Amino acid sequence: MPDDNQAIVNDAERAGETLENVKSEIAKAVFGQDRVIELALSAVLAGGHALLIGAPGLAKTRLVTAMSTALGLDGARIQFTPDLMPSDILGSEVLDETAEGKRSFRFLRGPIFTQLLMADEINRASPRTQSALLQAMQERHVTIAGMHHDLPRPFHVLATQNPIEQEGTYPLPEAQLDRFLLKIDVAYPDVDTERRILIETTGGDEQVPKAALSAADLIEMQALVRKMPVGEKILAAILELVRQARPEQTDDDRVKRLVDWGPSPRAGQALMLAARARALLRGRLAPSIEDVEALAEPCLGHRMAMRYDPTGEAPSLTELINDLARKAA
Image 1: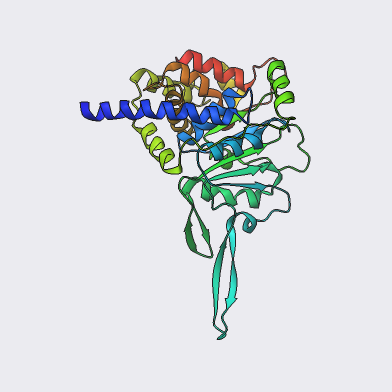
Image 2: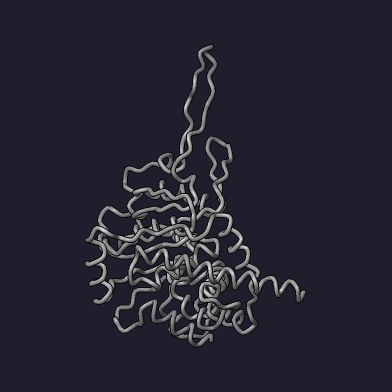
C-alpha cells in the first residue's frame, strides 16, 4: 500500500506539471478566463461534459478549439439549428450496390465520432435532435438500426448556450442537463483583459496553442483522478451539501420554501470527481473544502430549480447554493 500511495504521488506531481503546460497553451488563445479554463479542464479530467453559458463573442468557441489542440484530441463542431436532424449528428446508413448487383448497407459516421465535440448553441435544436446526444453522452456509444457503434476514447461534449436570445430555442430537459458534469458561466472580461484582447487579436502575430499532451496521456490522468484520496471531512461536506439542497431532506427553511426540486445523487458524484480534478489542476494531491465551495454552483446549479417568488426578496439560486456550501463546510 505505501508503494501504491507513492506511485499516486509521483503520478500526480508529473500530471500537475503537464497540466500547467496545458493551461499555458490554452491561455495563448483565451485571455482572462482562468476560472472558465479551470472548470472546463476539470470537467474533462473528471471524464465528463460541460455546458458553457455566455453571451456571443466571449470566446466559447475559441476555448473549445484551444482545448482540443492543447489536449491532443480530435475535435469537431456542430452548429445546432432548428432543422438539424439526429442523423446529422450520429450518421446514417446508405445502400451500396456492387458491380455484380449485390446490395448492402454501409454506416456513414456523423461528426459525433470524435474525441472533443463542440455542440454550438445546443438549445437551438429540437428536442428530438437534442435527445440524439443523450445515449452518446452517458454510454459512450450510439445505436443505429439496432447496431451499436462505440465512440472514440476519450469522448467529451462541450456545449454552448446563449442566455440572451431565447426566441426559437428549445430549453434543455432536466435529463439532458443532468448529463453535463458542470455548468460554466462565461462572464464579460475585465477592462485590462479586454484591452489585451483588442491589441493581441487584431494584429498579425497571434499566438497559436500547441499540443501539450496526447489522448492516451489524458486517459491516464482521468484514471489518476479517480485514485486520488478524498478525506472524510470533504466527503461529509459533499453529502451534507447535496442533501441540504433537497426540499424533502433539508432542515433549511429557505430550501423548503423556495426550491422546487433538488439535485440527484449524480450531483454528488460530479462534485466528488470535479473536486479531485480541480485539486490536481492546482498541484494538490487531494481535494479541499475550498474545491467543494468553488464547484458547488457549477455542479448543482443546473440540477435544481427555484419556485416563483412573488415577493422578489428570495436569494438567487447561485446565492442559495453558495450559502449551503459554506454551511456544509
